[in-house]
Length: 605
Image (cartoon, rainbow, N blue to C red):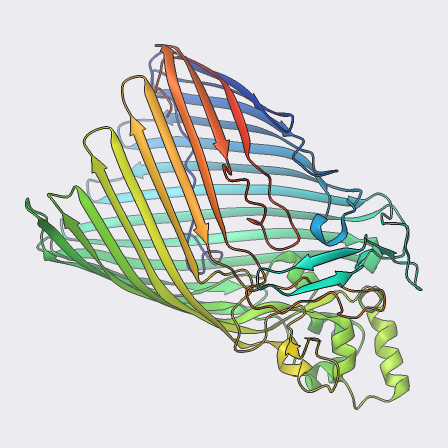
């Protein structure tokens, strides 16, 4: 039961637990290029009804750019206690502290910002798990997160060239997109202002979750649940005179039924009723089925399964989106009539509707598995940023006095051409996803996949309205450009139409080797840059602006002794420069090698 944050998919992380009757110990340390080092320690085990695990790790690296250092310390714990044969208590904790330099998009400026970001994140949970009867299972969970983020820009950096407003410019650079288009000039790196500057953001969440399931027959199980969540948020940014606090209380009810017919047809029907303090009541129905057209068996064609899934979902606005709501900003400035003129209302819940259907075919007595799925996702009421200068330019019917009043109300948003948030983007994404996996003998295993994505923007406030303003919409040699968001009819930014992966694993008694690779075609994007006149001369056509890439990684370990092994990992073997979006050079080929010591091998993994 994952709630509103899971509009279409979920990443689930599991904390390992101790299993040995004695304390097992893991210690490992490695080092590599770019002044990288990592140390980790872990102890785990059981005693009577108690199981325990504690771990700590430290990673630091200089990376390959000026002011791009990074370090992170992570602590984890998992303690469980078996009260009796039917009831278990468990508590987990994860705490991470990190700090990083933020050099900005180096390729656009060739000057590194003197900025840093620090985060402190705490995640805790406590669970009571009870098998009340052989058919009835209940779970009660309390979870909490405490997240802190601080960003600071310590000084105004630049090449020594300033515009008429005191904004510092980057070096003279030539930017070349993957589409072959190029532009030469200087872009604004840091705006004029008071330094140091920065912001801090806090998000504290507490939630209580109940989930119960009852097995009526071996073929029918029903599930019901309830979730209550309270969030307190804080965002302070003196540069924009922002000091916002909020409290959000949400709860939802979930019900589902799972079943099968003769172990051949499997189905899930369910949904949730969700109540948000920001959006009101939302519903999220879900359904899924699978059918074995050919049940698993031995032979060349050893099983055929047909699958279908459907689901609606919503997500809650991020705190930064809520605090930067365009409607709320206009309402606070007593400009509600202006919001009505622009057809802008309070933030609504971004929504998605997903359909997926496909087939899973096994060959050679399940030694080879092929999957192919067609998906069609509709994303509506998406939240996008609208630049303040565009907003003012849209209102051609305002008198000079009214326009100046709006500019004054926007303040720093207009000065820095920063964005405010609205529910004005919609796009469709459909395509085909395929995977193939196979084991060769007992030592070699392959897995690979390819995805074709056909995405198209159906609505966007910025590009819908820029076309209404003569001479405002930026162009490159007559080609229209979406500055802050993609143009209607184009692809969403940073979503490549062709992606794929391939992995290979080899394992024998003492040696394990892993090869992984990821591939991507070109994708649409924007440089988002402003020149000295706050114009768009540093923009390039969106189409295929980001480069395609192939990222290859190789790792392995060898057991020198039953309790000691040596391991190594090398990433980006081809030193691909453009894995990240345009403007952000990727870390070249990097490697680490180290030693691992284990007492009670395999106890917590």
